Length: 98
Image (cartoon, rainbow, N blue to C red; front, top):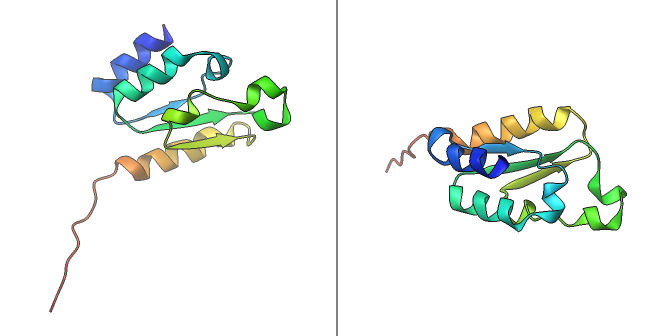
């Protein structure tokens, strides 16, 4: 189901904010789907995964993410949305004068 959602986001969204929970540490398939989506991904974990069990220190999602936010609780989602919005916002053209 998570893979389906990621694949749908490829055409339905400009980016993904994702807390893949236990799949972060175990699923190469999630990483592959995120890479194939080819849109910005911000990974979020409510707890500090680096202060937990050693197997949680590695995330397959991180390898496909533009950024990772850990340990900031629910605020992490707000920060992730702000960061994603800046990444997908249209850029103003640069103006050069001589």
